[in-house]
Length: 266
Image (spheres, rainbow, N blue to C red):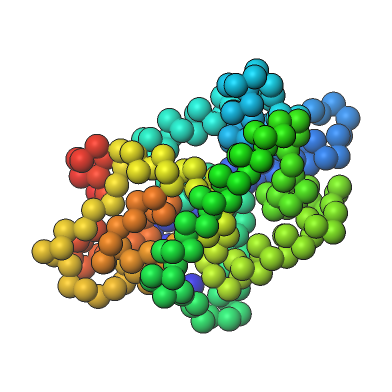
């Protein structure tokens, strides 16, 4: 494993900080140690805000298992994405961090990199928008509870083996199996929250730009991307998690640059 750049080191620190924070909340809620308290996991996930937003706006109902704080969290996430685009996924999502490091550990023992053909990968990425729409509409149609909680891999993992069902074990196995073979496979193709972030990030201020005149077509940026993107050919910002691994890989010509509100800062 290569020595990480300063950017990646900072990213790992943020990732693990968020992961440990959520893990502490989860264990406090699940095990209810004396003198401690914490709300359910759904209260700390913006996806709960997405699921309860339509029922709340149309009828004032809060979907069981969530609360108004989830809507506030969704609003905060939206502002964050408008500024930093997909950076939440690359830096702050605790489940994405787990899946990324599962793949890194796999690479220690099986070094083969599996990448889908570009066109297939791009087409499959739209599946997460379908998952997002399905969850939101079904929850809106039957606005009483979180109908997909029994197959939620985020909830399954952070329950640390408690309150698990056969369905949750199967879903968790499929998600981890996919992420062992394909780096961030769940994030790239199935994550509904990632779908929402992808849509909002189209209007995000932070972008990665390719100066084609400097590019020597070495494809190092393509090989570095954990989301199976090809920044040397086309920058699909709705799929980018702003991890900046492609920018770090482009050390020779520096044709890839990060811009904030159309002003280059790296």
